[in-house]
Length: 438
Image (cartoon, rainbow, N blue to C red; front, side):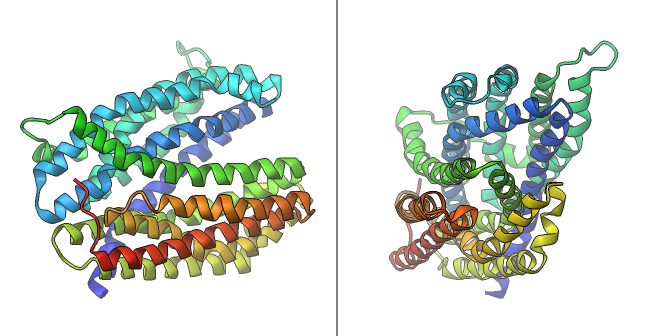
């Protein structure tokens, strides 16, 4: 157990830091675009929300290579790992067309949803450029997932950190223009995203060139049946990510029905929870790799699963304590409105309570991915969020007048159901040994 904890920490902290850096890019975008006015800022935020609601399926599908590569690495089969990488790189093209195409539909979708006409020109300008970045983004995601599944995590961390540092100055340069570069406004922030994505991908490929060369198959096998198999593994993972993303998006819609202050308070508390979520998410990625390695090597992967869950409990108890005791102070920078800060402060103890469930569910998904169980866990999200959590949030929070507090208790209920389902599923799959994914 102690050796597994060390191995998990060694893999998890660079992964978590890289994910925090990726979040930092979104924060930089929000701050920079905010200088162009409220309509531009709202347009970028809601366009990304629209775009990611579809693109999340493609991002999840890419993770099909995670159990395949991890298990093949444990087995010592470089050929299988390399073939999985090449096949997913091929699939990135149609997946990026779907993701980018969904972004291009943002202006129509936002008009259909009744969004203010003032934001639609900004949304169209932003979406038309960001759509171009999706082939780059999915290739980067594929290479990053491949390396992390091998237990190589630092290249992605360093490349993402550099991209975060580059994003702010590049945003301002392209938004406002300098010398021969014309001011592009909100489209400038979108072009900055494309350029940063290219730089991050180039750095990642350069840093991992020896590993990629060693695993690249001499004769790639791209039969349609092999590509279809990858999609059969990946699409359930995309639905897993999608059902969670859509559930949290629906809670934001419920907050909008209550009022602007509820939306602002929800955004503040959710942003803080998202930051803390990067810790167990890093552990989950490490757990998928460690469980897959042990499974592929024919070893008992139970110690890796238990160590990951134990590490998750530790990180989430710390996060929960911070939210419980310092929640009122943490929400202060998010709004000058005293009422918004007060409402956000009432949500922080609930955020503290669901930290444990949130950590257990994401780590549970990671363990099961490593063990090759990719289809049944999707039921956990459908059950937890759409049978329990969201109905509770709607009927008590919106219809019953319980407000944001009741909606957040609905989220907690959903996360708790998901976490319990996955813990039971881990025990069941462990008794059966796991599932070989090739």
